[in-house]
Amino acid sequence: MSYFYGPVPSRRLGLSLGVDVVPAKVCSFDCIYCQVGVTTTKSLRRFFYVDLDKFRKELKDILRKQPKIDYITFSGSGEPTLHKNLDKIIRITKEITQSRYPVCVITNSSLLYRKDVRRELKQADLIIPSLDAASSKNFYKINRPAAGITFKKVIDGLIALRREFKGKIWLEIMLIANINDSVKEAKGFKRIIEKIAPDKVQLNLPVRPTPVKLKLPTKGKLSILAKIIDFNIEVAESFHKNRQRRFSLDAKEQIIRYLRRRPATLDDLRRSLGLDAAGVNKDLRSLVQSKKIKQYLYRGKKYFCCR
Ligand code: SF4
Image 1 (cartoon, rainbow, N blue to C red):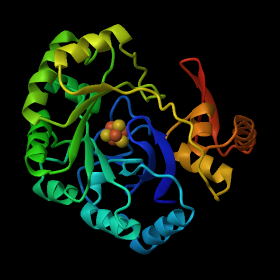
Image 2: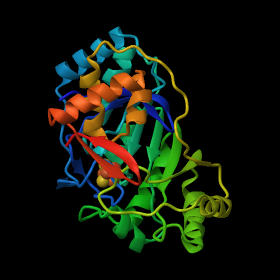
Image 3: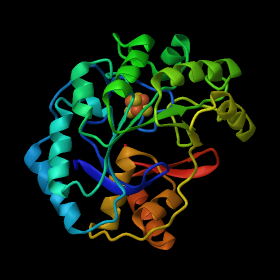
């Protein structure tokens, strides 16, 4: 399987070339909102997963096609900090790209309490760690962590990261109705955020299909919570730009690569791949017929997935 996917339109990062260094689905959490699906290997053990020659070759091949890229983002099918010596992979990425693109790591924050992990992350330009709860009870309810991870460890790790990391930190909070969207929880978030002092806080919503049925907070509720948290705050919005990019890979292969990481609608795929809707529609029908992908309805929208 390829280590790269996209560039995909990201609500936060523009066009993001995704890097997937951990196999699906190895994670230290099993979040109720996870768009990748249920965690099959819930673990805190770190391994060196990447075949470096293959990694280098794939990245060079992608760059040869001169795609438009705003960020190179380590996230994907599991928790990237479970890759041992992540700094080595980031350094190789920067060498090959001659540091033309900023590198972002999206992490669930579970391993930030470890000095070695924080040291490795210093190679990144931007870190987007998540914090989905302001209380231990909600932390276990939402993130369902591997044994050994506590709410306190996550908070302490985030505070230590801020102290040591010179790049930007955008803290992400996934808000779920009736779980972590109360006024009390928002006041708790405010206290914790003031201690962490990230550059920015992003409120996100689980809009894609999730393993557990979840409700979204209303717009009104979101603005109340944003006012209480009262920080440099941003509410994630859909990616509106429709930039055309060049791909020489077969469109069906691009669709499959995208759907391996996350379910998507026809519109998501159309914007991501820079193709016309009719072409994507035709490819999707053919992939469904050949049973390479599946389709289903979620919140009234037709989604496609490849699992
Ligand atoms: S941390 Fe990320 S990949 Fe892991 S279960 Fe949660 S949402 Fe999924």
